[in-house]
View 1 (cartoon, one colour):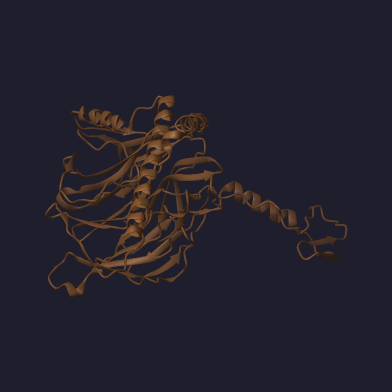
View 2 (cartoon, helix red, strand yellow):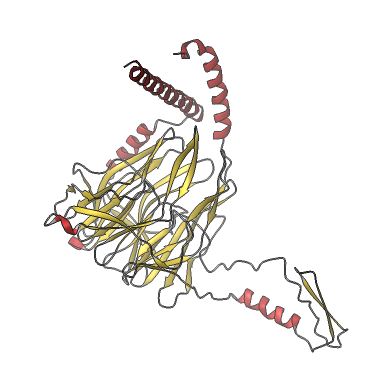
Length: 508
C-alpha cells in the first residue's frame, strides 16, 4: 500500500509541475502581448463576428485577383466552369493577416468576382471545403484556425457551414456530436456524406494531433455515430491527403505530426503510409460501421511530403503537387525541402505515377540554346583530351573558321529554372475542373523568410502542359523582420526575475 500511495503522490506532483509550467507560459505570453499591444484572441474573434453580423446585403463585384495567400481552399463549381476560393492567410514576418473573402473565377472570361453575404464565417485558414451539386449547388466548410497578428495566439474552429450557390447565402449548422475544434484536418464527400479525418489543435503552449473519423449526413443533417472495426488505425496527423474513390472507399496518405523525443524536445514526423477506409461487410445492415486497412500502392514511390496540394479528378485519379519535408532539424530551427512534382494516384488500381510535364521553351531560352549551338559549332580538328576523373578538357588545334570554339568543360552554373511552370511550394490550392488542373498560391521558405505566392497556372490533363494565368511575382509582398523575438528575450528576463523572487514558494 505504501508503494502504491507513493506512486500516487508522484503523479500529483507531476500534475502540479505541469500546471505551474502552463501558468508560467501563460504569464509569459500575457507579458509579450501587453508589450505588442495585441488584444486577447477571444476578443479578436468576437469583434470579427460582430463585423460579419453588420453585413446586411449580398454584394458581388468584379475585382483584382486574390492577394498572396496559403492554407485556403480552391474548389471547382459543381455545375459551371468556375473556381471558388475561400479564406487563407499571409505571414509577412511581422504580421499575420487572415482572410474570409469568397472569390469566383470565371474560366472562360478570366474574370474574378468577390462576393459578400450577411452573417458569414469569420476569417480563417487551414479549414476544409467541398462542393456538391444538390439543391442548385452547395459549399460545405468545417473548422480551421485564426492566428493573431503576432502568431502568439490561435483560435481553432469547430463550426460547420453551408453556402447555397443558388441563394448566395451562408447558413451555420448546429448539429450536436461533431468533431472537436481543429485545423489541418481533411474532408471529402462521398455518397451524400462528409468524411472528416485528423487535424491538430495548438494553443502555442501545448498541441494535440488527431486520427479520429467523423461523418456528417447530407440527408439528415446529423453527425453519425461511427463504429470502427478492428484495432488498425492511421496514426494521428495533419496536412495529409484524403480522397474518395469512385466505389466509395476513402484513402488517406501522408501528413505530418510531432512526437516527443525527450524532455522539452519534439521532432517532426513526415508520414509516408497509406490507408483505405471501407464499410465493414460483416456489419450486416448497419451502414455506419467501417474498417481501416493498410495499402501498399504500386508504381512510382513518392518522396515523403506533407502539406501538398491535392484534388480528385473525374478520371478517378487523385493529383498531388508540391509539399514539404523537414530536414536538418535541431532543437531551435528546422529547414524544409520543398517539392514541385506532380503525381497521380489511381484510386482504383492503387498505383502511383509521376507525371512527365511538357515544358515550353521561352523565346529568351531558345535564343540562349541557339547561341550555345553556334558557339560550339566548327570543323573537325586534331584534339588532345585530358581528364582528372571529374572534368574532361578537350584542346583543339588553331581554327581557321570565323566561328569561335568553346571547350566541352561542364558548366558550373545550372540552367535558370523555367518561369512558365509552378515552382516548389507547400499548401497551394489545387483543383480539377472538367479535365484541367488549376493551382494557385502557396508558400516557399528560404532560410528565415517565407515567400507567399499569388501566381496561377492551369494544366490540361490530356496535353500535360502548364499554362501561366498569373505569373509568379516574388515582390507581391514585402518581408519584414519580426520584433517578437526581442519581446521574447525581454519577457524571459522578466520571468527569470520573477522565478528568483518566488523561489521559496516553488518548492513542494
